[in-house]
Image (tube, rainbow, N blue to C red; front, side, top):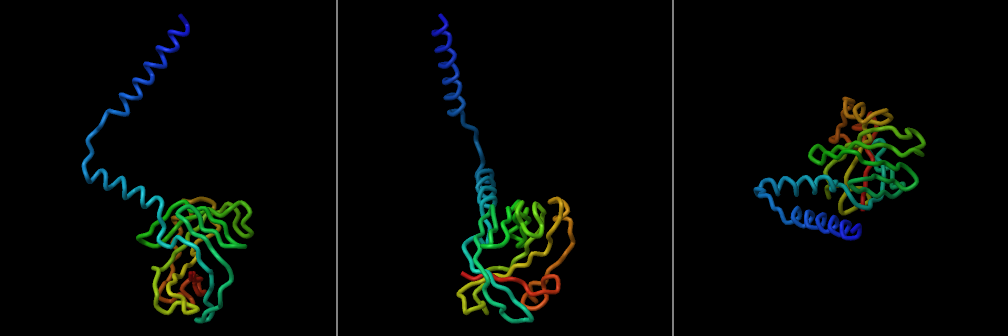
Amino acid sequence: MRKFRTKAIILLFALSLINTACFETEKSDSDNSAIITALVQANYIEVGGSWQVGFYTGGSDGGVFGNASITAQSWIEQGGQKLTIVEVDNANRKLYYRASADDSFNPNKYGRIDWTAIHSNSCPSSASRCFEYCQAVFGKNTLAEAKSDSTTTDPSNFKSSGCGGFGWNYMIP
């Protein structure tokens, strides 16, 4: 009797799963589009890819100093920062991050990076495309502190002083 009851329970459970899977709700095209857009945005960052990292100093190219890999989840510079991206705002070209526990300067702290659009004009080292970025906010204890920080950057002056009085860094392929 016990085996029969166990098999009956399993059968009823399986039938309820099948019924649930077959039950269809109507969704409008706009609902479906909104879901797809949210999924794409959650897994996309405009500057994603593998890059060489360089910097500007005094209005000039200071040279390449390493490599970086950027995904919607992380920003990792070889021999440098390992950042976990917690929020991306592609429209305003800002991301909020949490530094790794072994970060030399701000372990487990939050910050913000601003970046320019990827472009092909006047790229360092005659690169075919590039973008500039500024670590505008860093060392904050919480994401809320990083997001409420009013620090501004000036992308029109990225070669000399648009990032807290310094030139921005850049990335090239």
